[in-house]
Length: 267
Image 1 (cartoon, rainbow, N blue to C red):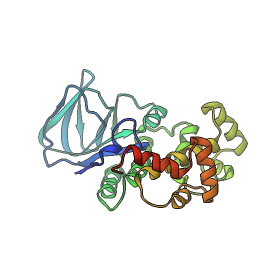
Image 2 (cartoon, rainbow, N blue to C red):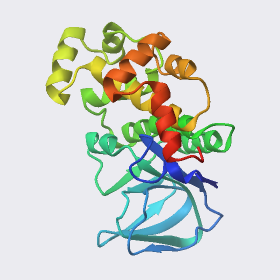
Image 3 (spheres, rainbow, N blue to C red):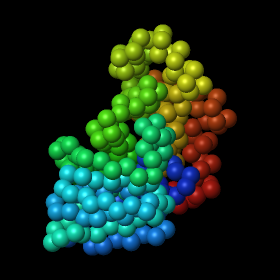
């Protein structure tokens, strides 16, 4: 089992848009679980073999191999085996509420899983236990979440969700509006107009905000140079990175890093 032990990543407000809290697989018979107060994290559960019973919202459901359930944080629930075998994969996480809302995923979501889903959960587990960082786990988990929802809900999501997903996955690249529009299969001018109407900001403003959030996180938790952080977040030069950062925060990247470390000298 993987457990995110860096507690600063899972305290609210979150410093990352998505945090993989735990991920793993049960033994041959999943022990009964009862959570009358719910769980502090969003909870994804997939049955690989056997069957079990899931109780939530005054309803009882039997889940067999290839079926699963998603339960939002704080929703009371209980589950346990029905029979001699009940093997489950689970993943708990924080963040991504905007994604869940965009795809209209409520407090409980039961689903039939395609064959590739177990493989994708295993792949995410391997990514988490590998030589990654909280940032790479966040990016991988965010992409996995959207792929899972689209595969199991039959929803492609809104246009703005498609754009946001693309920006989150490619923010380090020198993106243009033409590239973004092609990626989401939309006309550039129609997309720009729709996105502004739907979100209140332009696509490039959204991209700049995403880049800034990534840069702030790296400045807080990584030791690489300010120049390298700027490049890794899609800013073409150190001077441009500094100019945009100051315009949005009132401080230079170095001042931001130093101020944070004064507040938390352990970093």
